[in-house]
Image (cartoon, rainbow, N blue to C red; front, side, top):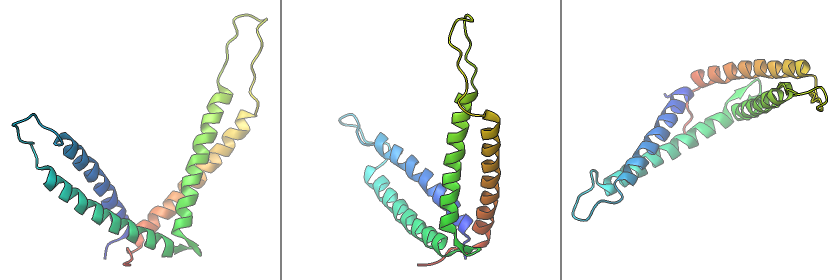
Length: 153
């Protein structure tokens, strides 16, 4: 029985292989008249279709497993959504803090002084707390990935 983490690694590998195969296909789309392509485009397309079929099946099984796997009564799908949103919130908060804490130099004392609109230290603490929550959530998700069997449809 395949573990969820193994399926996720295979999914990542399939995506990489599809990108590489697509590049090879495009490189063989045209040749100079009278020349032959380095690789047969029909064979590349067949292989690409096989990879996409496997990827579709794997994605379906991963999604079904994520929806049916519970952690403290909460589906793994919800944990994944929370992780994605936490990551986005942290990234946005850190970008905001970088702008809020950036020094603006004045050429003369007569120039208008620019100040931060927030208490940077307070918001930095919030960002650090969110980052801790994200790390803890990610550990929980990774643990589930390595202990959960991939479900069959």
